[in-house]
Length: 422
Ligand code: IMP
Figure 1 (tube, helix red, strand yellow):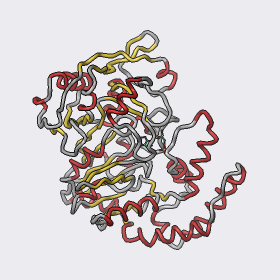
Figure 2: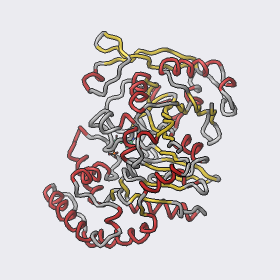
Figure 3: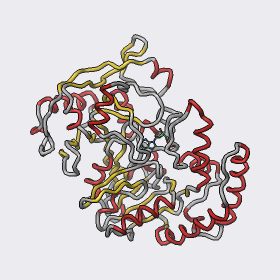
Figure 4: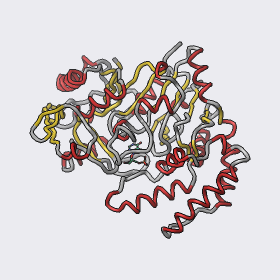
């Protein structure tokens, strides 16, 4: 039996998972999304055309690869259908798209609830993407969620009536606009018609694929420091974008998982609120943002930027059992004359490399840096690590040395091909 490969983000998302996923999915028979929803965003360029997808696994672009939206994903059908239309309009096919019958559906009341909750948080805003993700997962765990199998059943009207009646009571209480039951029902019945041929038992599909020796690629969304359990709660997303979410979001067992690739950038970034020890809220951060084009795919928000933090990386490598690292934007960091790498924290006078998401711990930590020289020049044509300039090799060697996991992929430029694979 073959084992599934997994690609996960090791920081706060936006590490450039898409590029690695794109490379690995060329050989994948099945590409599966495990968690999150349309809060994720990946931009892919195929034959000169740019796609900004939120839900459809990138594997869809490779002919013959099955693209699966797993049971752990919360699906906004309108968003998904827009992506399907965009894909088909440019000559692609959605024939190979499968949606788990157990995936929960995002409704307009989830989006309105996300907006209302953020408004009510005042200064304590999480900075969510307002895609209804948190409220959709709340309903899932509260057991009033509506799943894909309900969407295409006769139960839809009854379930939706109960949910919209209940949510509208809350909206009325806060003077927030209510959701129109009839319009929602009409819209979602249309969506159900379109999505019905794609909704299936993806758990059996995935296990049969493994048993038949097929290659499965699990496409991570968001990242470990945004994990509801292991991230910097409450400034996190509402799912488990780390390794556990791969099993619970697909139905694959732990023993079915093989290589786990952890993606990072040669610097770091974060969107939304929350602690960020190596943040450069200054001219350096602004420079990194411009050099790395650090603006959100989903929200267009400027990302907070800073140095790479190996204390946090050691934590997420351990959490996920990462077997190989993929480091993007090595070219970007090399545009600076010199740059820093956080190798430890000073916590109240004590040096540590043990990370904790505890807010009191993080606010009392100052980063300990090592300095590196940049000016790498154009490295986009380098095809092996030894071809990289010495300054770049020193940086990568040091990361490997301190983390103890090999670097398997090195991003050397913006293009899909600008990558060294070791
Ligand atoms: P939510 O997932 O929309 O509830 O947002 C919760 C937090 O996760 C916010 O700080 C978002 O900016 C962040 N977030 C959610 N999805 C992504 C992503 O794909 N990349 C980066 N940050 C994300």
